[in-house]
Image (cartoon, rainbow, N blue to C red; front, side):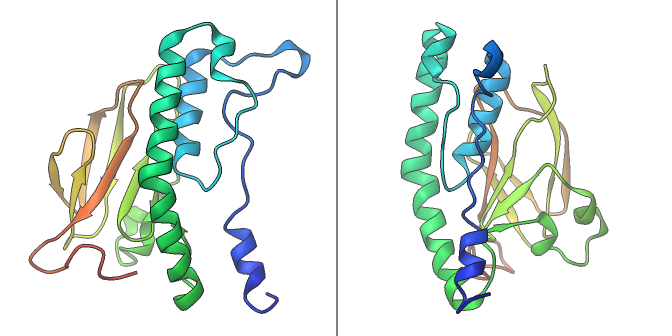
Length: 186
């Protein structure tokens, strides 16, 4: 750490994810492109190794536009907010699920969900051909709202075979509950 700047740099490493690489003629399939697009939408930088129009499918271009819009209007402001938390408290912008439930042993085994701050949980689909996945919502005193369906679930709940269409990514926003106001703890 050099005057606190090393930590900040580590949290803003960008992955070269969306679309694979055109090196040696490789072109990812549509499903892989869309699923990687969903992940990078929730990271600081959206980069594309393969352009969405390379697939020749207008639906992929439209899905890409919607995720870029989501990144600009929802994710980027959230990252800016959490960067201030990083600077003041040292809490990471991107957090493992156990961060909000350190006493819950289930959270220590989750490697395919992550939090942005304490307020947004992202659970991307990581297996080919899947349109359902298990999602664990941490924090027994929390309520979590699915941003796609507006359904609200109790924290400490395992959602088994939760539907996540190819054009969706599972995102839950922490809601106010009687015990924990939304977004209070950072």
